[in-house]
Image (cartoon, rainbow, N blue to C red):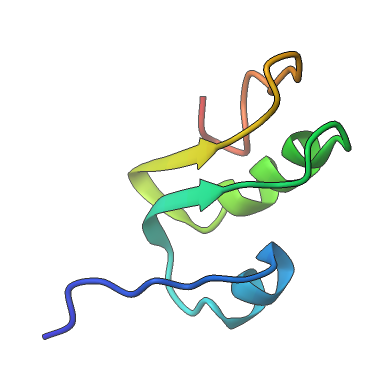
Length: 71
């Protein structure tokens, strides 16, 4: 029985090939280009309830208060 699967790559390609939602997502987008505002809601739709999204940003970048149904 497979307990984990790690998918690495550009978020659009990963989302395209991800058949099931996951429990943990780590994002390291380019800084200062507004990716969190765009990408987090898209990613949130592919995370199980109770799942976690960890998104690296530069210190001054402001993250949205919500992403999809996640707060």
